[in-house]
Length: 169
Image 1 (cartoon, rainbow, N blue to C red):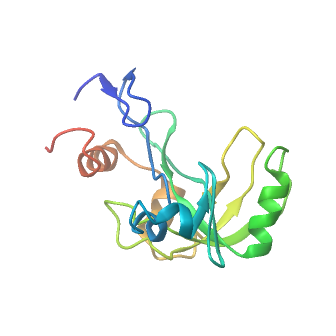
Image 2: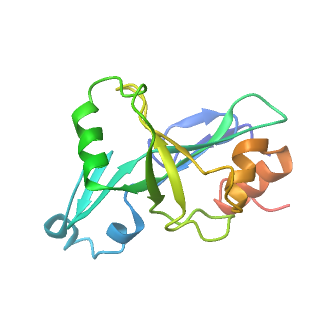
C-alpha cells in the first residue's frame, strides 16, 4: 500500500492512507441537474434545505481496532425542521451538551448494504467540529457492528479499495 495519497478535496498530498471520505451534498440534492440545483435547494458546506427537507453534514466514525484513530464517513443526515433550526441556532456555539436528535442518512455509503434512509442519532458538537452520527446498537445494519466493535485492517483495506483510494487485493 502507498504511504501517501492525494486528497480529492484539497488536492494536497498527505502522508499515510486516507481515513475519511465525505459527500458534498445529500444524494437527493446531488442528483438535481447542476444548473437547477441553486434554484431548487439552499446549501453550503454544512447545511442544506430542499423544499421542506432539511439536512446537515456530519461524521459517522468507525473506530479502528488494530491501529489508533477511526475511519470517518462525512455523510449528510436528514433531520426534522426543528432539529435543523436548533443546529443552525447553535452553529457557532458548543452544542455538545444538547440531547441527541434522530435523523436518517442521506447518502449511499459504498461497501455497505443500502444506507439511504438508515435511522441514526446525531450529537451536535463544538462550533469547530461536525456533528457525530450514531447508528443504534440495536440496528442489524453492518455499520452498527462496525461502529461498536471497530474495523480491522482487512475491513479498512476493503473500504479503501471500494472508494478507489488503493487498488484491489
